[in-house]
Image (cartoon, rainbow over all chains, first blue to last red; front, side, top):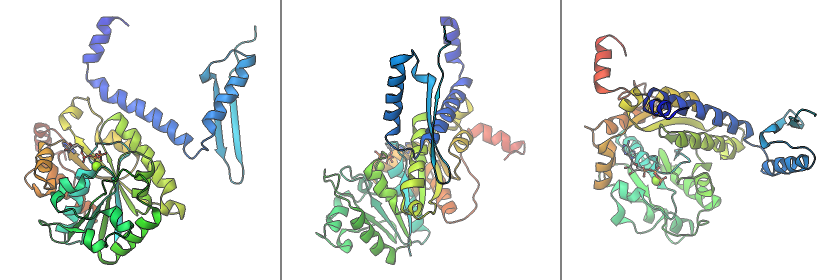
Length: 86
Length: 269
Ligand SMILES: Nc1ncnc2c1ncn2[C@@H]1O[C@H](COP(=O)(O)OP(=O)(O)OP(=O)(O)O)[C@@H](O)[C@H]1O
Ligand SMILES: [Mg+2]
């Protein structure tokens, strides 16, 4: 994006509130989905990622860890996107 | 039996104390015997906004520690009949408030008040959790700004999991109070609109308080802004109090003055 575009965009106020709204909707939805999760989850997620990284080169955002509570059990869902096998 | 209402927000400086002073005064003006409690231990401020700072002798923590009786610590408001203030302590001890101690005081107050308003400290930690724990209703003060909305959502999560009612499997009644609203900036799409915030937080709207110079003036004088009946902020707080008491009152001051005028001419709302 050129500097001119940037300035034009910045001066166009119509985008400001809607950008705020969009960003909020995303972060709030994310935070609601992790609400009530045990405190150890983020650390466990990090350690899982570290272990996988020992073997495969992946990015942080290629791993998603989710804990779902069903009626009488909890399901830990681990989703890892591995890079294409060469 | 008194109704316990917490005024909370997560984020600091959004207008909790201003709103606590205004709403408790408004309730008393409507004939409800009301006590407003400053839960902001260490950062007492409600007394200044209510204009009774020079009459503080004992505080909340003194009562909990049985160094004073509740009767000795309560300050009777000089302007508004039926209104009492329980000031916060200036102690730096964060653990000065205990759940047992707070519960005992609330029970005692509940015997002869109609409303107990709890002015929460900022944050989502212990102090804020203590202020909201016993509440039956919560007024979530929010500014139309990203960090405030996000923090409001987090405090809603705490209300829904860590309050006494939540622990009993019941729900705290939630109200959204949008403050420091600037209709012309909303019209220019520079500021989140009331509809935007309602959509994101998805709780019923109690009121919208416009950004107003009257608020600073009121705090300078130590007189709750609701007593400034000429000001838009004062009137908006009056409307919010009416809604809290169950009246249906249309929302005002949501639009730029001119725009509102033309819209009305054209038959809009
Ligand atoms: N509607 C309004 N218009 C203009 N200024 C306002 C309005 N509401 C609040 N303010 C100002 O915002 C500042 C913070 O208000 P207040 O102390 O009520 O917030 P608070 O949420 O209690 O803060 P804290 O988290 O520190 O306890 C004050 O300077 C107050 O005058
Ligand atoms: Mg305050």
